[in-house]
Each structure stands twice: as structure tokens, then as C-alpha cells.
View 1 (cartoon, rainbow, N blue to C red):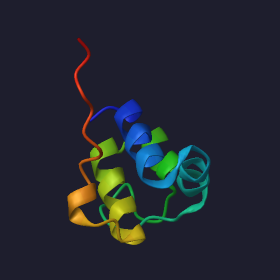
View 2 (view 1 turned 90 degrees about the vertical axis):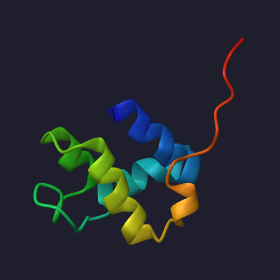
View 3 (view 1 turned 180 degrees about the horizontal axis):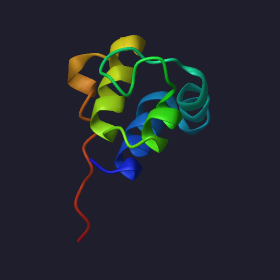
Length: 76
């Protein structure tokens, strides 16, 4: 997962404005390199965007069926 994919998932789940608030203020738990940091700090330090996304989902109780994001129709 790319960082741009992480932010797309955040925007889809929480809205464009609130996703940035969560990314900069919500302190995450979980794996080493993520725990005790915000999403922005974890990503800046090189943490996997996928691991950061899953940590956000756990704290925010995002249902498993929404963790893959919305379906995007192919262009064409």
C-alpha cells in the first residue's frame, strides 16, 4: 500500500477534513514503530501505510467489511 492509498482510505472512511485531524492527533497503538505515534508521525518515520491503516481501524472501530475501502470502478 502506498501513502496515497492510505490517505484515500482515510478520506473515504472519515471524510477529507476529519481524516487529517485524526492523522495528526490520534495516538496509535499496535506494532513497534507505530505505537505512541500519530499516523502522520508513523508514516514519516517509515512505518508501513498498511500497518498504520490497520492501527487506525482498530482504534476507531472500523468494521472489517469497510477496511478495504470502497470499490473503485475502472476507467474506460
